[in-house]
Structure formats: C-alpha cells, structure tokens
Picture 1 (tube, rainbow over the protein chains, first blue to last red):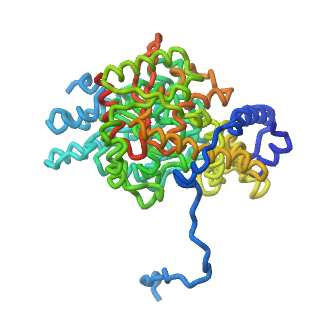
Picture 2: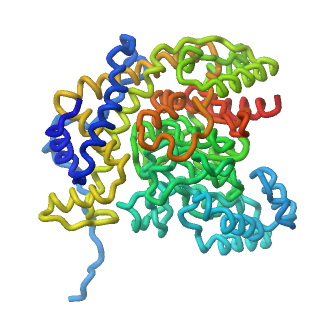
Picture 3: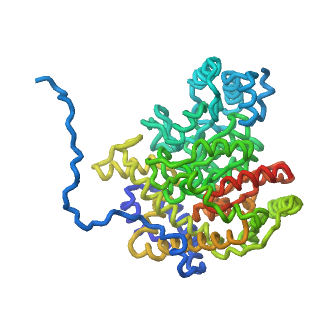
Length: 83
Length: 478
C-alpha cells in the first residue's frame, strides 16, 4: 500500500505536480499494479540463469586512472572574424 | 489504372506493377490520400498526413522514367508511428508535452527507408509514449478498429495497425516494448513483427524502456514484413545495442538443424490462464492446421514465463521514469511557468503528461527508490533472466514456439481504460519475447463469431527472423 505521504514524496522525486482530485485514484491504481507484481516473490529463479544469458547491466569504462592525459581532440579551424 | 486494382495491395505485387510500367507511384499515393480523407476522420489512425507525399511520388516516377532501376521499396507509401523521428516533422509521441516538437534529424530507420525509395504518407496515432494496449491513452483521442469502430485497434501502435488494416497505407512502422506491434496487428488482422533486440537501430525512436524497445513493421503479409525488415535491419553506430544481422543470422545452428525445422513448442501451462474460450478454440484450430501441414507439436514447460508480465510492469516503468526525466519543459516541447525552476519542471510535467504516463513515472520512481529497489527491480531483473534462460533451453528441442498473440480479440472502447491491470493483461503473451530479446511475429489466425480477428504468435531464437518469415508464409498456405 502506498500512503499519501509516500505519493507526495514520489511525485517530488519525479518532478511531477499532481492535481488535487488525483491522489485517491492514483493510489488505488498504483496499489492494484503493485498487488499484481507482488507475484514476483513466488516466481521460480534458476541459479546461474544470469551467467547463461549474460548479466543485464550497464558496463562503463573502468576508472583506473581518471586523470591520465587524453589524446587531444582539439583542431584548428579558419578564423571566423576578420581582424 | 483504376483504384480498384490498388485495393489490399502487397509490396511484392506493387513492385511487380511498377517495374512492368503498369502503375505510377503518384496514382498509388493519390489512392491512399483519397481513402485517408474518407476514413481517417472516423478512425483517427493518422495524426497528420504529409502534404509533400505526392511530390515524393512524382520524384519516384521521374526516376523510373529516366530508366533508373527500382530500389527495394520504390514508391511504397508507408505510415510511420509518431514516436519515430522524421526530420522537419512534428514527433509528438501522442503527448501534450511534445505536441509542437519538430524533429531535427531522421531516425536511422527513416534514413534507410528513404534510401530504399519509400514514401512517407503521415504519422500515426499511439498510446502516449507507447504506453498502452489500446491507443486510448493518446492525447489525440483513441484510434478505432477498422473492423469494428466500437472497439479498440490495440496498442500502442494502434494507428499504424489500423492504417494497414483499413487500406490507408501499403505498410507501416511501429515499435514494440511489450507487444505494441504484435497486439494491435492481431486486433486488426494484419502481420506484425517484433525483431530480435538489436536487429534494428532505435536511433531516433522516442525511448520508452530501452532494454526492451524495438522498431518493427506492420504489413499485410509476412513477405511484406520481411521486405521492410531487410531494409531497416542492420548495425548502426548510433545505437550501441544494434548488431550486424548478416553476421548473426547465419550463426543460427539450432534453427537450421534439419531435425528441428518442423518442431514447434506449445507452452500450454503458460497461456492456460487468461485465454478467452473463443481465442482458445481458434488457437486449437491453428494447431490442427500446423499439425496437418507436417509440423510436430511438442509440449514445452515455461514455468517462469507466466511471471513475465509482472516483471515487465517493474522493469518498464523503471526505465520509462528514467527516460522521461528529459521532458523538463526546457529542452523539448511544452513549457509551463511555475513559482521557481523546480516548480517549472513540476507544472510542465504535471500538465504535459497524461494519466497513464504519470502513473508509470510514479511507479518507476517507486520501484527504483531505496528500500524497494531490491524487492522489486532486482527481483524483476532476476525473473527476466530466468525467462530468457528457460526460453533458450526450449530452443534445444524446438525451432520456434507458438502461442496465441492475445488472450482475447479486440475489446470495446472504454472497457479497460479505468482498470490498468486489465489493460496490461492484453500483453500477457507478447511480453516474454521482449524480456528475452527474441524475435516474434503475429500473423492473422481465425476470427470469432463477430468477425473479429485473432493472431497467432511465433517466437524464434535470437536472429531467427528468417525462420519466422518462412514459417508464417508456410502457415498462410496450409
């Protein structure tokens, strides 16, 4: 169950103004969806399924030496203004 | 050439007419424009018809008159879902927040279609930001089903499906995050393909859930869907998830192994709940047809697949709430002034986003927030991986999996709009292919006693589009 306080806080996090008549129906709708997705708790999980198909997560560049000099990306262009 | 000859045309037949010099692109475009003018006011499939379509057709005719060889989609008039960017055109995603946003570049798929000779007739209606299963969540109002205007066209690519079904375009593009190409295709009696994740570049597609979104064709036949797929597929440096289909497709030993070619998996436990009696009856008839056509039907068990929709309604809103953070009233479209900067964001988003979009943003914010992230988001990702794993296991035994596309035929307008879970259940059978990144196609099956169509869904291993096209074409002739 989502409380009115939680909804206010979620709306603030999401930068979303809710109109005054909305919270009641919105809480009802969100609860019905959360109630439906609750069945995930009983879903069977296979150990190692992640390894089988590869983990679904973002892979970023390693931060081994963040301050090492990078190759210059600057290049010279023709003068834009006449002197 | 009389208009009658263009009725229910296919791309294959069109190209034959064109190369034989028996038809002009200008006439075909006029045929569709006339039908759109007649039928679109009641169907609401198109949000905008492009005034320059006749000029594009004239250019095609001039090209051919100069003796240039026809390109793969020469003069093919297409409808484009309004979440795919066409340079210089409004791309609204059927949202108030983007109602006046003009695209500053072409999506990769648009570039490729243009280079192949296609003509763009207009942009089609969708559920706002592709969030929905009925096109009723559109700021421009719902699209009606051409086969019964009291019913929904399905969604979210409802405008594209209706345009093809009502003969308002030769074919169309849609996008499929949880069933948004296949489900409306089934409801409108046309073919819809969701390609393998990464087969088609999403550069220029307004993102819903980036780990699931794919662009796919809607067409009258599987052969037409294949022609479009071959034009739009392929690696694109602007979408890092895209891969070189030429490199992946031949590496498909499971399908090409001849002893599997005629084996189809039927996951009865997966779709036994929720399937309406008329849809079940239609599906059994389709199975009989496959069986008579020489296919061996193998019962397979997919215990995790029935949790696919629940996992989807955690992962998709989580990604959507992140993707939609960019609509702040400054970088794109509508802007509403508030008390201060934060209030500008709040007012713009509160006013610009529709009810379903606001619901999913809040839901996504909830499942990603501290204390709920593990219970919802991580659990859903683990279930997603289990589903992908069990589907991969199934493809050791069968070449493809066959299911009904949807639990019911097209439902009446307004029936589910106030009950989100009932609306979401329309995607019950289509979501697993998105979670596992697999290609899946919906082709017309039978009809119910009202004449409303059902769809038959085939799901193949990654890169198995070729097999889906062959299987679908074969089924149509059984």
